[in-house]
Length: 620
Image (cartoon, rainbow, N blue to C red; front, side, top):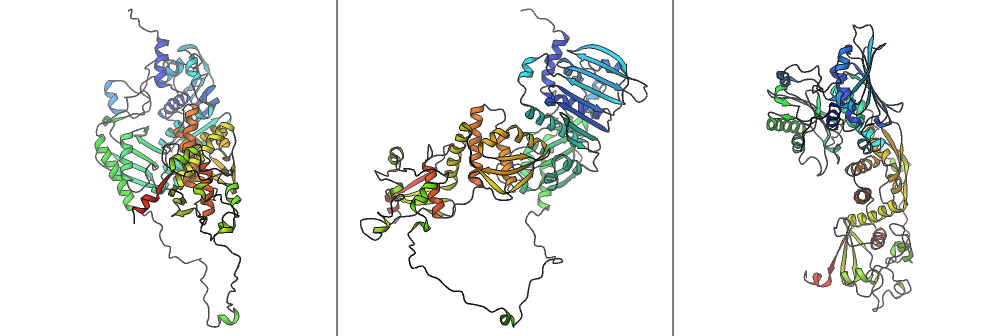
């Protein structure tokens, strides 16, 4: 075995694999350099989700010509001069790896000028080699353009995701930096179209509103705490706005975004018994600690951080959020203010002289038969079905053997009895009266079968039905859409809109009619049959769909289709209209037994159970 020292360009390409993972990594590093340079305005220009061009323009301090060349050397930095400086890091970039790594896998042009210089300097670098240095006319600050990212590493370029996915990651990194400095103006454009134009904000809450929309900022509660170890400030969301998924949870320390599952648990613990299981609150928590008590150097991306007193931080964050939750009232209060409210009319003693009261007339239909399926013919119950299917033979050999239905035709021998056979002989001893399906507290359906009583879980039955329908829609590109009475606009933010755009074809195949409306808003015109199309429910439904799409990001296509179908089925089962009438119950039964496996959901949970006559006898 012969050991050799790698050439500098190969070493830089290997290092680039840690620092430059995708176009969003370049955006993050360049924006942080602009902030460290004292910029008051930062413009980010993207083409083809960063594949073709990533350009960052700032009005910071700029660089001298010599520094503009040296900055592309590995471990070249202006932030550190001695080992002691590592104990007091307050800047974003300090490792000196970013520009060297970017220049190793892209073609880079840097144009910069200091305020005291008459002319600027332009440096062209590719594959870690400086190709040219020349004087040019340039504005104060830096203008760096990164072209053809991974042009010399085709394997890395091949595994980049779709434009919408990569752009979503760019927007996410842009958001992280913009949330740390509300006093700096930021602009982000993609393919010539502005995504964000953020002016200098008066406060952090205004910056949150500009970035994530008023739907997020209006439901935030201020938090503040000062201790000898850490100062905490920021915002947490109202418990009722907690949602599934981790899309709007942000930790910052000394102005730097970071991730911490450990401190996230402190926030979740403070929300115990306030939010439903499986949901996560929104929060923007800013920590201010002495620099020597935190290590931001454990990862090249600097998003993982080690604290000296992490257990104390955990308790402090928990206590701070818990106190805020305790001081807030989340129940609606009664407003006793009557100014401007309509007056309640009062009736005088002679009211009846002017408005005579008439006794209502009662009409009786002597031909009404209470045993006649609420005025519906048997064919009406079976012909429409919950999913518009045809009458189903419930007593199949497979299911009948399991449930003990014997050789009866129809569900328990009762569902498809004709009028000639049943209603014409209603009171004959040889024929039992037709027994309807009955709902129990909107949760269960009970119906009589020969072996006893069949009990069906309504939500799980809907889940089974919707799962089969979505699988068919995905495989055949067939769908049924319920059009909403009024199209409903929903502000979901730029990142979420990119997810919707990236999955537009899939959502359309399932029956969602969702149209773009600006950079951060969509309009819901229709939802799949089985979902609730009621006004006001589109936002909740859309966020549930987004959570399902985020959880399956990057899965294999077949696995993703099955997982999404299962998640969408659960969402539909929760948001669909309640089953309240025997006719609706019967239609649900029809649709359930038309499924490929009526007894279980796709996740293996039972949809029904049979209570035999013998088991009933034991109760008495």
